[in-house]
Image 1 (cartoon, rainbow, N blue to C red):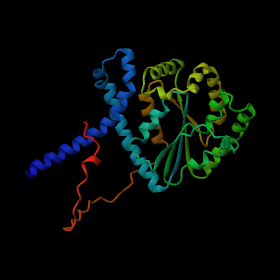
Image 2 (tube, one colour; image 1 turned 135 degrees about the horizontal axis):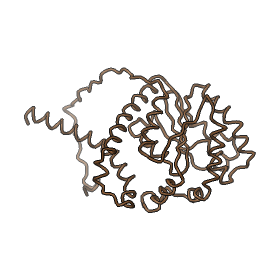
Image 3 (tube, rainbow, N blue to C red; image 1 turned 180 degrees about the vertical axis):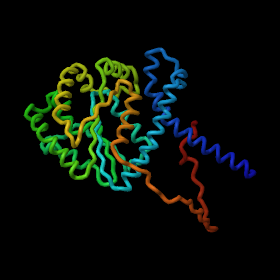
Length: 306
């Protein structure tokens, strides 16, 4: 093979790798829109090739590059960042979190999504089970729901008393002020959708076998109690919107706009800069004349079906 051929082959490998990286996001988007297209009778190619879709991908990848810079800055400067994502069921919190973490190092940026509390945890100080998950220096922690469960699902579903809720509202501003004083950057997002949009997204989940696992009995009950959730949300925002940790509302009826707006805003909340790194030099591979690679038995390989 000539030098030119080797160069062309290497360039093709690099191009294929870049395309594969783009396809990762495209696959997620196609999966997200699959049932919507089916229900609305839309042609797949027109959706993929639309100017809006192209703009979305272009902006998403640009913002994800900035997230990588933010990650490096947080790790280099030992910053502690906690981001809370709250909102109604199917509001798009998970989709936004997925796009934030997609290109990041899970050792720096991790997601916390706690299950329902155990009997032991129910007997503890309410905030106790969240404390171990708070960020250490050089970490970003994304809370997919948080201690605000008490003012939302627990309150609406009757899992706690009104006196518990009142104690929560007395305690949470002081708790969050302590976190901020300790050096944690605390950012709180509420993803806002309409009654009609939640109904549509639930219908999509019912129709889609790949998403039916997302529908829990609690989700279905939340539809019936829409107005109670609204009152609880309004009370929560009014009583926990503090200067040290204000709430930010993400208009989330349009999922793609919500993701871009949320990531753009998150980036604006931290004064990150490029971290100067030394140029990486790949060392030459050491070759030992005595080295011999033993053959691997055929029956150990995964069948080459594709």
